[in-house]
Length: 352
Ligand code: WQD
Image (cartoon, rainbow, N blue to C red; front, side, top):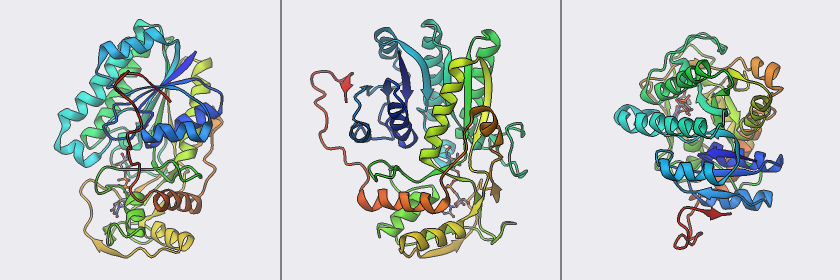
């Protein structure tokens, strides 16, 4: 029996694969590598000593996806694959709806055909939209304000309808707050394409001297120092939240959403000063105008995950910054995809 991890080569995916393998699960990974590197999967094997099968395909490739379910006994799915850049989603919405929603529908149809009805889904705090009510609980009003967030919201709704049609479905919707940091080894980490949109990868690129200075988007929010406050969560804590959710869906049915955050908010300036303190690197910055679509305060009430999954974030902001810096300083150019695979013989299946 195996757990299928879609998007398993990505930032969250690779860290989740490490936790799954270390917990003794067999996994099969699917990833089209549009925003990730197969090198990360080689490092998953390096860190765990475990092998697994990897299919470099898209979820929309129905025949190849069916082959996976035909050739493997899949017992559950952890569905992380998806485009996730908020700004990009505003300029190319159809690409996001096709990739995220159509791809998910193909996955769900094949799961149904093969009687696989247990799934952990990578959702996002973005589904809460511009909710200024903090801390945010799972029953807060939903209202995404961009195409990316709407794909996450719509996929949640599709899965709720699936459960109504067949109550044996067992679904955990994990609403991530702000994942940052990296595996303590420094071998896995966040490797965004181009100039980072998100705060921490931008800070680490400034720290290695690749980018000159950080633009801080606004200092006139009603927060501790006027800069934006967010609920940063260590990516390893997030990965372990997936393990706990998997354990739960294996023994229950139903659809439940869970906030994966620390419940603690930190401002941009607090992140900068923390990073400088724990790494000794200086982060020059300039205060500019607010970024369109940003809100001032966003942090979670994570107590439902603690109560129902037995999960609590363990790592603090210092460790998040130290681990993010270790990754970036030991991988200044991120993952370099050497010619790691001989894809001539079997372009579909690569055994790690
Ligand atoms: C954090 C804070 C910015 C960059 C996004 C997505 C969300 C999720 C996580 C996928 C804000 C400020 C940032 C910079 C800055 N992704 N900032 N200068 O916007 O909270 O959430 O990533 O699920 O869906 O919306 O994260 O890291 O972009 O911003 O001042 O160069 O840092 O204004 O206050 P965000 P972020």
